[in-house]
Length: 371
Image 1: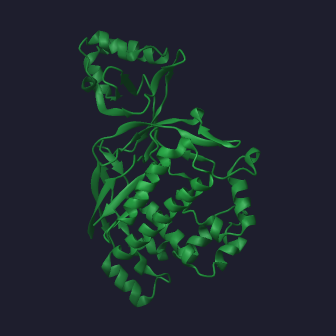
Image 2 (image 1 turned 180 degrees about the vertical axis):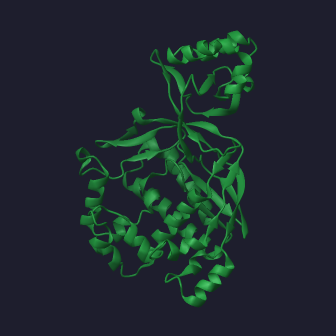
Image 3 (image 1 turned 135 degrees about the vertical axis):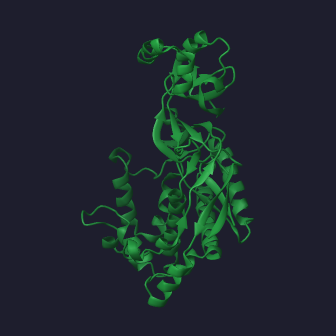
């Protein structure tokens, strides 16, 4: 068993599936520029039980809950009603623009039952698994397996990775090599609220698409944690003796695994930088490109016991899939795959044509691991 140290490099979000609603589950303290996630028990301590109907009435009628609480407690501070408090990075989710008041929901970061910030080991393992699978596909010298359409679709003729996983990682869950890798959860302390716009290709121009901007509770850069990382040696030895796993399980040994992760994410960033160079680096992505170049340099500077991965919300189609398709699939299959993933009105357009980032151009979800 090894202890893996973690350091967040760019805002990281692994969601709970809940969107916090303004004036109900969170309040904006304008003077402090803080988002306060409400602790209901603390609110009960400020209002009388008889006033619960007033509280629910304010919510139903979209009144101003903060003003009401300030009347009940004139020296009200964020800590008086807070389950947790977030700094705001970028725009506030409750703003007034062009005379219109906007109260946007905030995508909640996953927390455990003790309200500690949680990044599940399964999410980290998923990122590692995608990278290893992509690496195995790239290392397949003849690539004949990915050239056959029946290996890329399920029995309903829908694109599916089941055959790829069987071929490169193991034929079933019992013989999947990732059965031999156990990744523990990681816990962090604080989160902040990030304004995350999208850059979208509209006709022939890249521009912000404000209609799909989101506000996201993220673990901020420089936050640290650690997790347990284990590969049961007795199972590995038994598997070797019985030749149980047909695939090469040495890829899971830490030095090999970290090397593969460095290579994979270096290629992912390099491909993204090449893409923007071909697009003539529109001014709107200058900060984004600088952030990517910095991350690429950090990967290149990693020691053998260090690597960088990407995971979580806003990391995009290429990161989620491993970005192996265009080089390893036949062009007609790539086109058909893209056709199935998007609305037909976008057929023939660039895919993907959207990038999610923070307002200051940081790509989301980069995490450094070391042992």
